[in-house]
Amino acid sequence: MAQSFWESEAVEEGQAESQPAEQGTLAVSVDEFTGLEERILRAVELVKRERVARAAAEERVAQIEAQLREQAPLVEQLQKEMSALRAEREHVRQRVVRLLSQLDALEL
Image (cartoon, rainbow, N blue to C red; front, side):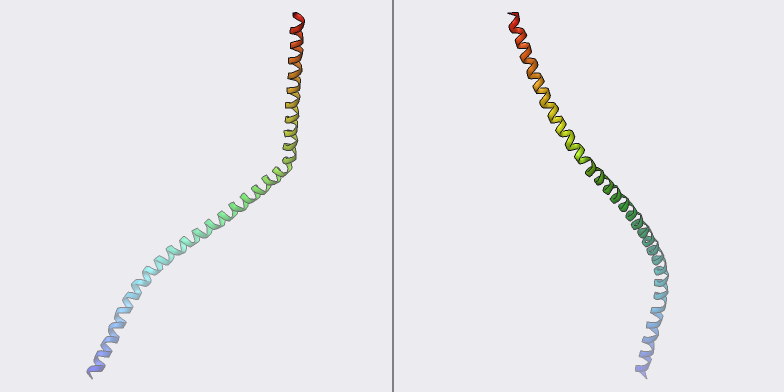
């Protein structure tokens, strides 16, 4: 009989200890769960906004790359023109220097 007394007392203690602890844990868990749920919802909204922003940025990059491809031939043409104009300027400068030296020779 002593053995069954100790067994029943142990079972009652286990039940008594688990019920209040579970209720306290459950109340805290609901609050924690609500807070966690709110953080998850904010994180989901943040991810959605970031995806939209990323898609917009990728679209802008694609547009800029297309513009760059369109303007590359123009840039190349302008670079060639600049080279030609510089060569022409140098040629004109040399002619002016030659003419000035001829004028100087006439004055002597």
